[in-house]
Amino acid sequence: MSVQQKSWRHGECHCGEVGFAVNLPDQVVALSCNCSMCSKTGFIHLIVEKDDFRIERGAESLTTYTFGTHTAKHMFCSKCGVKSFYVPRSHPDGWSVNLRCLDADANLQLRFEEFDGANWEKNIEQIEGYER
Image (cartoon, rainbow, N blue to C red; front, top):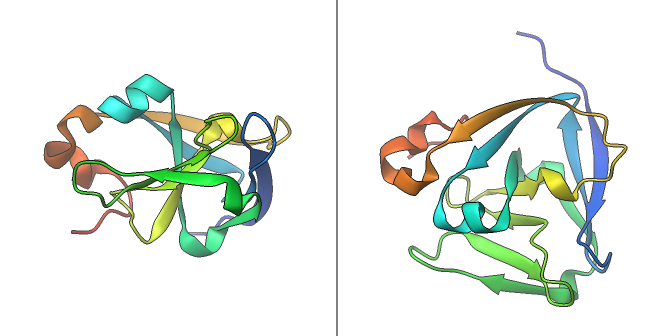
């Protein structure tokens, strides 16, 4: 199996206060989730390893929200309220980046998959890279 080359793509929240970069291959899987949080915010997941993500500016402007198991760390820009990325419950040592917050020139070839997050416990093992 060949390893795809990665390159850094950039993104930001709505107001631009919080900027980030994510190291992605050209071909990625984007997850659409129907859990209570994602269905209300329209978040589309790109799940990446810790080393493939960095906050470039505005870390001091982030506000964190947790609920349920408090494993996921939902981070929002305190100025515009947009969640561009967060630490997901499924990958607590990694990040989930909101595809919708990447710059328009990210040039990704996307494959969309549905995830039934409303029934998280029953379906979590379907997500690539998840380990109990």
